[in-house]
Image (tube, rainbow, N blue to C red; front, side):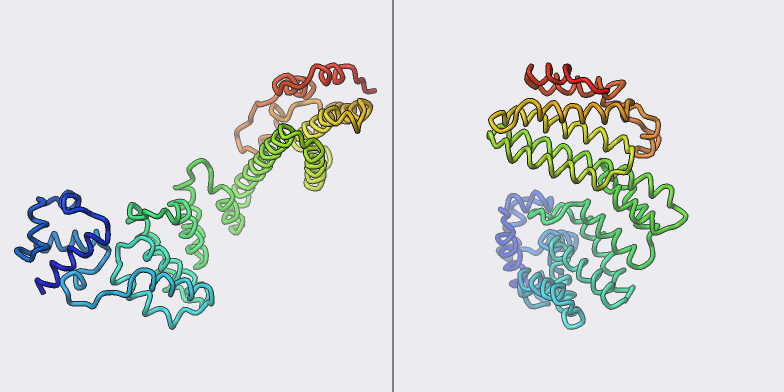
Length: 356
C-alpha cells in the first residue's frame, strides 16, 4: 500500500501541475515531508491524506491504492454529455456516480453531474434525482475555486438551482435564492417570471418584469446608437439609415397609443434619420430632413412632458423615477443635438422648422 501511495502522491502532484514546494505550502507541511512521502520513506497521517484527496479530487481509497485508477475525467464528461444529449439516464447513472466517487472535488465533474441529475429528475419526473442534482450544485459552489477553466459563473449555478427548485414545485425557494444573489439586478427577469407563476405575487412580478422590460429596450437602444455611430464612422450612411428604419418599425410594433416612453425613443430615432438624410445629401435634399424634423416635433407636441419626470413612469421603475432628460421634450432634443455634436447645419434646420 505504501508503494502505491507514494507513487500516487507524486503522479497526482505532477498531473495537477504542483511543485513539491507548492504542494507543501498548500497542505501546510515542509517540502522535506512531501519529498519523503513520494520516496516512500514516510507516509502522510490521516489529516494530510484527507487534504491530499480533496486537493487532487480523488477518494482516499484511490489515493492509498484500494481502488483502481479511474478512466480519467474526459471519459466521465463524455458520458454526461451523451446522456444529456440523448435523454438517456438510467444506463449512465452508475458511470456518473463512479466519476463522482473518484473526482469528488473536480469542479467540472461535480457541476456536470449536477446537471445530469437535475435533468434526469425532470425528464423522468423523479424528485429525488432533482434533489441529488441540487445537492451537487451546492457542492459545485463550495468548490468553485477549483473552476480553473471557468466553464460557468457562480450566477449561472444560482440560475440552475432556481430552475431545479421550480421543477419540483418549490418556486418560493427559487425566488428567495435569486433575490439573495441579485447583484446588479441581473436576475430580475427570472424573479419576475417565477413570481408571475404565483398568483398572490402578481403585483410584485409586474414590478420586476416591467423594470426588466424597460432595461432591455434601453440596452437595445444603446446598441443601436453604437451600431449607427460605427456605420457612420465607416461612412456606411445608407446602412445606418436602413438600420434606423428597422428600429422605428420595431418600436411601433411594441408601443401602445400615447406611450410616452416609446414616443421619446422614436423622437431620437427620427432625429437620427434626419441627420443621416443630410449625410446622404447626394441622394436626399434638406426637404426630407425638414419633414422628419416636423415628425419629431409633432411627437414632442403630443407628449410635452419628458418621461424622466412623468409620474406615470413609476410604473416601470417601482418607487423610483429617473431624470435623464430635460423638463420638456423640446429641451431634451435640443440638448441631445448639442451633446452629440451634430452639425450647425442640422441645429439651424431644427430651429427653423415650425409646426402648427
